[in-house]
Image 1 (cartoon, rainbow, N blue to C red):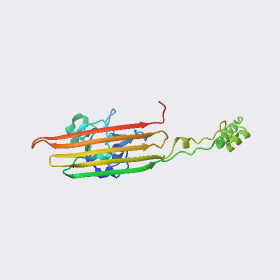
Image 2 (image 1 turned 90 degrees about the vertical axis):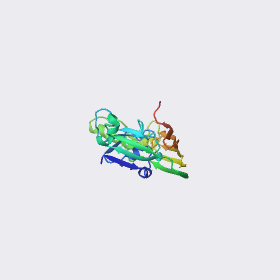
Image 3 (image 1 turned 45 degrees about the vertical axis):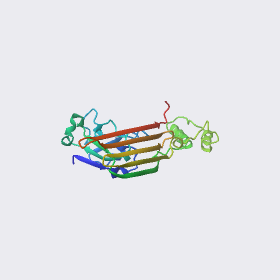
Image 4 (image 1 turned 60 degrees about the vertical axis):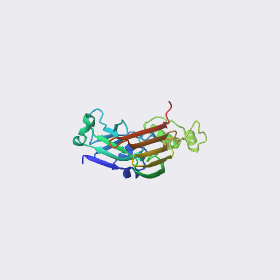
Length: 259
C-alpha cells in the first residue's frame, strides 16, 4: 500500500539505540542505510521506494507536525506511532518537499485520568560479528621466507630470528602483537526511560526522561545520552486548545581517533 504504519509496540520490541534502526525492516518499500556502527553515529538514511533523484533523496520528516532534519534525536520510547507516506497521492498535501516520501512521527501525549508512571530499562552486550583470523608473526616469517625462496631470492629472516618470533623471548624486536585484542572488546549497552502521564478534563500531560549509555566494540568509543520531553495539552476554552511540545537532548560521544 501507499501508507505504512509502525506502532509503539513494534518499536518497544526491538533493542534499538536510534529511531532509524527501529524502522529498518518494518515498513515495506522503505530502505534504511546504516553508514556506521559507531556509538552516536549509528543513525541511517532513508529511501522510500528507491532512489528518486540524483541529489538528496531523503524523505520529508515531520515530528508532531513540525519539520525536522533527523529523527535520531528522539527517544524511541517517546514515540506513539510512525506513518510512512510512499506515493504522490498520499503525500500531495506537503507539496514539493514530499517528492521522496514523507515520514510522520507522533509522540505520546497525556490522557485524562489518574497519574500513570511507566519505567522501561534494558541492558545488553555487543561484540563484532566476525573478525578475520590473522596468522602469528612466526608463521608469517616462515611464509615470507618461502615466498622469497620460491621467487629465487634470499630469505628475509634467519632460523634464529624465526625461533625468536616463536618463543617470544624478545617481544620488542620480534613482536607477536594481537591487534584485534588491543582494539576490540565486548561492548555494553544500557537504556532507561521514565514516563509520567495523566491529567483532567482541562489539562493532560506527558513527561518523559531517558538515559542511554553505549560502550562500543572498539575501545575508547562510547555514547552518553540524556533526553527530556514534555507534551502538555490545555483546554483554554470551548474553542481554543493549546498544545505545547518541549524536547531536550544531550548527546556526547567519543571516538578512538586523535583530534
